Length: 455
View: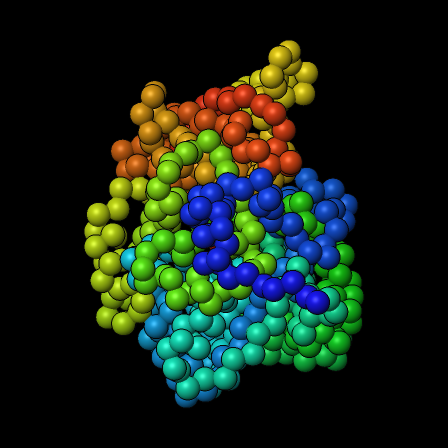
């Protein structure tokens, strides 16, 4: 007999509350990319490729996809997404930013209109789950088809997705295409063939570099990949493994997994009953030096991430009125923190060769030991913000982290201190350690100037 599945609501109740669940020793650590080797060559050169040459990154395995078809498909998307979706033609993509009824961020993803009234939402399962719930509970006249991440099922994906990124991305795709490459505007979708196989490509960028996201049916995956690798070879193409891939966000300024605002509030209870485990929402771990006994202190607001200008308050999206008030009163801004090299070396020495209780080891290149990392940033002894995503960048030659800082501290060049470690974590993947302090300097987010809209 198969064990009965548990809802998120049941898991929260069994754990004595959301913080009891997220801090449980049973929770998993940092996100791991399914079916992707850690390295194809070495993660340092793989990182450098997307800034100095061309990189091939595979998205076929770790994303979830939700296909939505029907006369009310765009109404559903406008209901879910806080950002502007009014002018949404076929062969166009837009970011989706989903909010809770209380105006906190649930998650984000990318929405592509592939045909009239036919959309694909791609990204972390968090935004896919929420969109599916709204579709089913809201009575929208749509048909839903869901393709799970390969972390959640066996077999092959339905589609392949290859990102081609870097200064030589355009030349690489031109070389792989059969005939002339069509003109594709930023966040536009174009159709052409590679190795005789019909593909479509989303024009966008990652880690501050221009590029394409090429997709098509899985049976054509190897033929297309071979052609891309052949075209990329003269440009020094590197295939990117899971270690380097996980660090792209540190350079691009995107926080992949802020804690979704789904664990509290009466309005979220139907969703907690609907959402079944396993899944990152119920299995992921909350960690880091920032500690609070109020789950809401871990929630974020879309406007804090620099997306306020994209929000359309003329649309009737979930959480509209609450979000309007939260943005008007927000006290934090997204910035990059550059970790002091001497302090990093000192902490690593204490972690590996020091006497007594060691400091927390700083993993490389991704410095995470939990699913939702929240480290406290202070100015003197005063709370200045939280650091949410940390990684080493070979392009910056430094450890970088993305942080939400109080406005008074969100000034490039400001020196702050990051409290590193979580001695009370209690999970098997977190060694015994003591808290350490690392000096950090505030820098813009994204760290490098973006050129993703250039041709």
